[in-house]
Length: 510
Image (cartoon, rainbow, N blue to C red; front, side):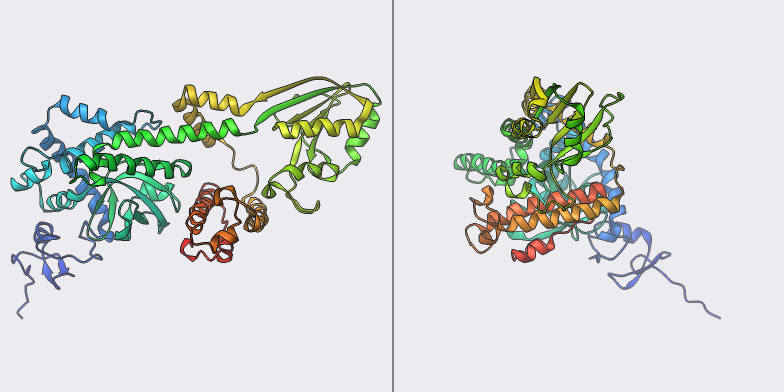
C-alpha cells in the first residue's frame, strides 16, 4: 500500500505542521527563515515572535540580538564616544539602581535609530544597506521594526492581564490606543500610570525598549509643559526637528527633570504641611482619681493598649483622644472630607494620645492645630487639677523637607525601605476591606458636593457639566483612581468607586 509522504510546501523537506498563514505544510527551517518577511504571519501563531502568543520567542530573539548590536556598535563608535553618550543620557538626580542600565540602553537606541551621520543615515540604516550582516530573519525584522523606536511619554489606560496593558502615546494621542507587553511593568503598574520611556511598535503589540521612569501626578503637567516649551524653542532653529527625536536626544535631561520636579513638589508640599510632633506635659496638682474618672467617663477618651515604643511602666494608663463628644468641635475648622458623621460611626478621627502617670499627664498630637485645640480642652476638662510644665513642638515636615533638600536619593531609598518593611498583616484583609469601603463611600459622598481647590473651588458635580472644567475633573479623577488601584494591588483590596464615575458621567474612566 502506497504511503503519502508529507513534505514542506516550500522546500520539500520533512515538515513540522501546517502554517496557519499559508494554510500549507511547512518545515521549521522555512518557518524560521521566512516568517514575518515572506510569510504574512497571523497574530495567533505561536511560532511568530511578533504576535502576542509568540511573546516568549520574541524575548529569545531580543536576547540574541543584544550582543550582535553591541558588536556592530563597536565598529562605528569607540569606547570613549559611547561612554560620553551614556553620560549624556544619565539622570543627574536619579534614585534607582537601574539608572546606569537605563542610560546605557538609551545611548544604544539613540545611536542606532536617531543619530544620523554625514549622509543622513542612522546606524541601523547603514547596517541594513550592508544586508544586516550577521543577523537571522527574526533579528532583521526586529531591527526594522525598531527604526521608529523613540523616547516618548506613555499613559497606561488599562492593565489587561499579567503581561499586557492598553496604553496611549501622549506625544501622539491621535494614533489611538495600543497594546503594550511587558511583564515587569504590568506587575507593578495600575491605570493612569505615566512613564518616560523608549517605545517600539511591532505588528501585533508594542514593547518598552528600555527602562522607563514614572512621572508623578504632581510633576506631570509641568513636565509636559517644559518639554513642549523647550521643543518649540529648538524647533524654531531646526524646522525639520520632531518632538520625539528631540526628547530622544535629550532623554537624560528630561529624565533628570522628572526627579527634580518631583523633589521640588514634595519639598513644597512638606513645607506647607502641618505635620508636627507636639507633646505637652502636665503636672497633677489636684485629685488623681478625679482626673482618671474624667478620662473614663467622657466619650472623647477611649482607653487603649500601650504602643510598642511607649514605656512599660506600672500604674500608667493609655488613652486615645477621639474627635467625638465635646472634642468633635475640632472638625469645624477642618476640610469637609476630614470630618466624620454621627458619633456612632466607626471611622471617628483623633485629636491625639494621652498617657496618665501617677504624677503627670502627657498629651501628644501630630499637628499644631490639634495641639492648640488640645491645650484649650485640657483646661476645660481638668481645670486646676493640671498645671502645664513643659511642651515640645517638633516640625516633622520641615525635618523631612530638609532631608530631601540635602540628600534626595537617601531620603527616597529610606521611604522605599520603610514601605517594604511595613507590616501589612496587622489587620485581617476582609476587615480592612470592609473598613476601607465604608471610608471611601463616605469620603466620596462628601467629595461630590465639596468645593475642590484643584477645580477652582467648584464641586465635582458642577465641574462635570462645565466644558472648560471637565478636563481638570478628568485629570483629578485619574489621580484618585490611580491611588485606589495602587492600594488594591499593594494590599490585596477590592475597592471600587465606579459609582462616583456614574454620578459624574465619566464612563471613559471605567
